[in-house]
Image (cartoon, rainbow over all chains, first blue to last red; front, side, top):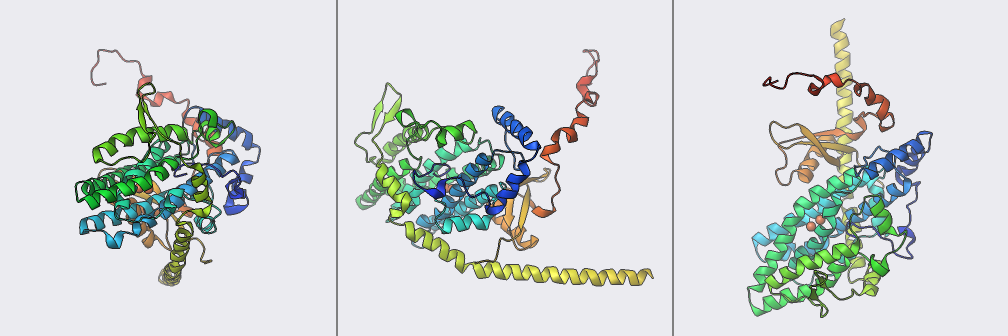
Length: 364
Length: 95
Ligand SMILES: [Fe+2]
Ligand SMILES: [Fe+2]
């Protein structure tokens, strides 16, 4: 869901978006002409050659809508993701930690903006996307509906949540849609600082007092399972759905690995880090499987996962309320800036007219 | 909340002296001056640039992907514009 696309089984909002929204209808109409067929053949050829689709290329309407939904959800996750850590900025334990945290949260805002910018190239308006977030028509990653109870949570988020985000986002740097892939390249360059500062934060706590060590362990206990759930529902083996999201997104080159493969990679990467850190991963079934060459791990509580996505997490309503309030409270800034720009344009217009009149005068 | 979307500007950044400005993405802003500032905050937080251009997205004129073939084809058969077209003896240096 964080750089992923899947629909709730019974969520009407997750289906194809209304094509009449946000200019998509004109875009669609433009493609329904004699050139449409030819354009789609070109699309197939570009995908087959593993090249990139660019904004003005012809593309199937479902490809466009899938990308709008996925990129928008990804963007929403980035900006909602500012809140759990933003919660600790005023209480960071040192100036160094405060500066790091501010920079990290600002980066997340930036990731959101890179992604909204990419989504807009598909012919949808940014205000419309924000509106869909504010009204619950589009979701964001369920991970951000969990609370940040202690300072150690900032470490666990950087280490586990950004770690999982990186795992999801690196393959998206090769996504078939050019603007999305480019946004991911910028984002991934910035994410490694996020993961490292989180690990370092926990590393310091683990070398501190018994209380600090307990705090780091407690944060690991609470964030481990939600971080695994970030990769989305199971989608391989008996869980593979023919004609499902994963299959279609893979065929289109939007998705490069299954949810389960990415989750496995994440576990394999993270377990040795936990050992080095000295925290225990809260999974009694976790053990190395020499035959597979991977760690085996326990089953995620999928009921909880769907419950939190559907709004029943600890912070769902607080997150959206905070988001809507800050958007509303920022309205006067946008209005003032627009009014100033309008006045400047008017003055420039008046000046140009006066200048033109002078010019005529001197020519005569 | 019906202030509407602010105008869209495309952003180009010169990574360092000696390189061209390269398109990096877009920002919304009420005017070009603010667009430059927003672009600074968004695209150069880690000194990724020494210069920024912004262009109102509505001012960009582009070739059409639909006429890609007819538009670029005239260059297709002029292979004599490439140095590899020419047959010269192999033992002549610096050619
Ligand atoms: Fe991010
Ligand atoms: Fe991050």
